[in-house]
Length: 554
Image (cartoon, rainbow, N blue to C red):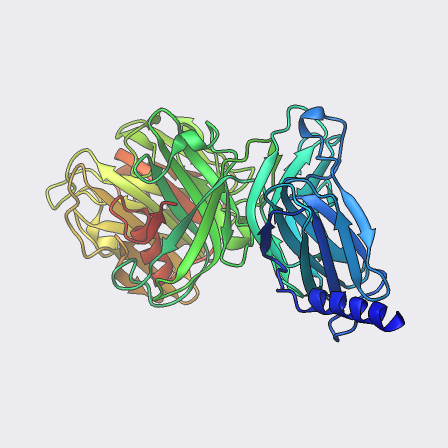
């Protein structure tokens, strides 16, 4: 009799241990019982390990909200000394059976029961090291809100911290859907589909809760911006239109958008303009490095977060630590995007929708300009902007037009101007039709004139002038026009004027100011000299027919 019992036990054990390994898969049979033997990673029977069986649509209980109350059909048991467990009377449906030693190892078995039956699903599997998950769901403005991360089919309810971070370190292999929920009715649950956990690996979801994303590709090769060297701390201009972005999928002001780099680092960004009616947007995104001669660099835009969620407070794109001192987008105002200071004080200029980057600022040529008070001295620096003239500037032009100027005295003045015949040519290089930059203090002065001597009406030009670091350079449309090694610091207690320049009486009779007649856009005053690649990249990125960035629709 004992021999018969031993033979029967041996046959049952052999049946279980030789059954196909369905771990991570689904066994569809018409039965209502599951039996399995579980092994440790070194091949031993896993004794005394907790077993939890949940329907695949199960969500752990986190609150009393009946609309989100999890499925209560949990079955719990434990492996015996031989690593064996059995679950009886499972109803029709799909299940995830998790076997977790609560220390370091886990496995999960997916089982499908298609109809009621008395037969048995026989399985075996091996415990593996835990998989881990970490991420961030963003900050919320309501400090009393409590959020949780749930995993479909697993008995997990993970609190999300106030700063949006979450982490769990005891997960099984497999592909799972996640759900972010909260304890208030106005919160919209956020589902995250198909997250794959792998043993001994950590999955990162740095910005959970955004429904939509697209890739933005950067090209600095000869077919794109044609930049050879890396450019650092650069504000990348991104223009959106209805041809490459679905504005109905974002908030009306774009406030649910964020940007991340290829390492999932959140990037600084600024929305200059978001027009839901015209379906256009202008956004600046700061990159630590734009890689030269590369078409492999990408950033990702995320949007569509339906809850009142933000990420940590972003730092400004045009940060003073990056050399930005005054940055004027002219988006209906004279606000400085670089600092909470040095805003423009207007005198008869006005906003126009006809800018090269969104709106611009129009100057009437005889009375309009704006000034900026108390900018610090600039031993090194740069001035850059886009300009469009009402009339041609050429050799026949009689009156000089000032784009920017700063004057302390006749022997201490600075200007960036389009020359007319009234500018006295004996004091420096240049003649009517030239763009000229002047740096003068009581010790002496330096003039820098463009080779270009004709500027046409109704055409946008990009000018960039830098001094310092052993050079004094003038660029038009990203191309070097002139360069000398001599320069002077921009210094002295007087206002910077944009759209007008006061002059040295030895340059213009009686020092009569010259006013600009036309439209300016994206006017910047920087506290450091900009490199040739920086200047060219600025032009190639900001020009309307740019080839630097490509938005890849999802």
